[in-house]
Length: 150
Image (tube, rainbow, N blue to C red; front, side, top):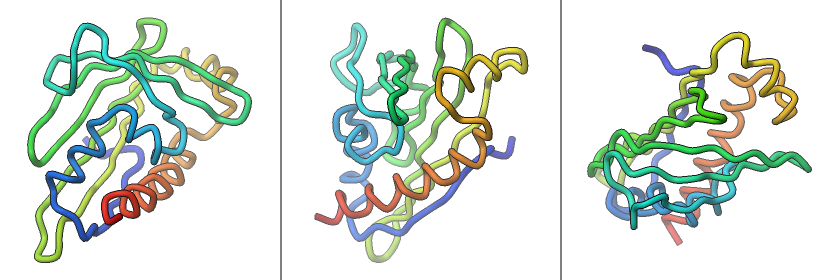
């Protein structure tokens, strides 16, 4: 299935360094556009099946989510997001080695039921989630590159 938003960037850092950044809840919160951090729920770190509570911010709006890690390998970190028990999205970071480091692709899929979308617009202030996520991904990848290469 084609993602609703996706972009990639080449990073002059090891795939392992990038994986550590995107799978660390605090550090990911430091580079992501809306996600501002989270905490593990019954887990001490990233692994398939681990859950975490995330906090997202956009202007004055703040909303929590609960996510479950679905992939956690050297080449992919991904998680499914739920809010109020309902599916919201899938986020995925694919990491491919290159001659000078790696290429990171961030992708997302909108999983919200149609009837739930207007409610999330009120909570987040975002009317066109695909366009906003595309911009967010591009900004996040630029910050991720700077953090990984520092």
